[in-house]
Length: 294
Image (cartoon, rainbow, N blue to C red; front, side, top):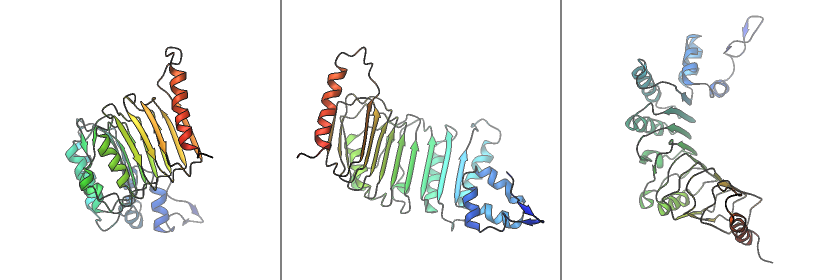
């Protein structure tokens, strides 16, 4: 990456305000950012105070530099504790143990992280840690657990996610319909909910009720056939459903809806003689609920 733009010997990039340079560097892997610290004292300050943290690693735990890499993450997160994190992205598959991930999460919440993105394979059910749930500054949460179970906090002890506006769950298995429904409804400022390639095979009912939700997306997914989906979101404007046909869909109170896209993607129309009738009944019932009676 070229860091200097000189005209008549003048370094114009380095003279830009720090916040602008932080934004320019925000999409780089943290290793690339750290390499720039050798350019000058000013660049060292800029790179070591960056509030954006991105790791996209192809390391494995058998790599000779693995422990060094893990120590680097710890050091970076622990240093400059007074600097809040705008965004933390960690994509590491099965590289780390769950204990490592929990330690990283704790460090980010201590730095008041606003956007938290995690993609890893826990190889066991993963429970949302209390420090993340109660992080006062968290506005965006994106999780990909590579198909493993996401254990949600008991709704009686939730009291968190007070600022969360976007929740993206990808490739996770959700077990408890009641707990999941309570979890969504407790996010009082949630505006965007995305369920992508999620497994609902152990659910009989998924109830999404929110007064703040504006965007709701179901994309791909598995084992919806035994699950009834109920939606009650009076502020909802955009509803996208591109997932398997559920047992039933019940929609209420969509007073603000502007866009609806329904696509049942799991049926072979040539093999299922009842597909057309099932779809017609489901969509007809949905339309009755979406369109106010005259």
